[in-house]
Image (cartoon, rainbow, N blue to C red; front, side, top):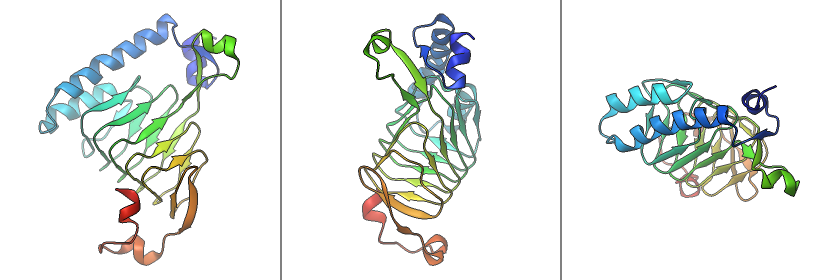
Length: 201
């Protein structure tokens, strides 16, 4: 199994391997183009996103500055907003659903390193996938750790560090992130301001 296959399989791999460097450099080429294109030029930015990512719907929007490592491991659905200063380390797959709101300074990390110091000295790395389901709202500065899935319709409060998967339809916050309560049907269907706004940003 080559290093690229190891990366895609979630096994420990050599982050300096040439095949991985080629894929990373390709992603960084399109990422630079994206960040040098004005946020107001949505048509051109959409074209670049469709080259950078594995899938990107033209109803979605990313605001620069934006950071990712490969791009080719990221899927972004319909009508999704990724706000300023978001970072995605995508050594494993990152699937972001439809109608997702991702606030500024959110960080999605699929990457991790072995505890073995000899392996870390060689920059060995592995990844676990992240899934953000439809209608999720990630508040400002949220950190999502490797292997986490956030269920449909859930809201994650600002500054939360999400180390474990979160079920659908809940409000969660804190470090480490914990479920505060379930969201009510009224909250899920009303257009009025709510009491979670101060937590999310």
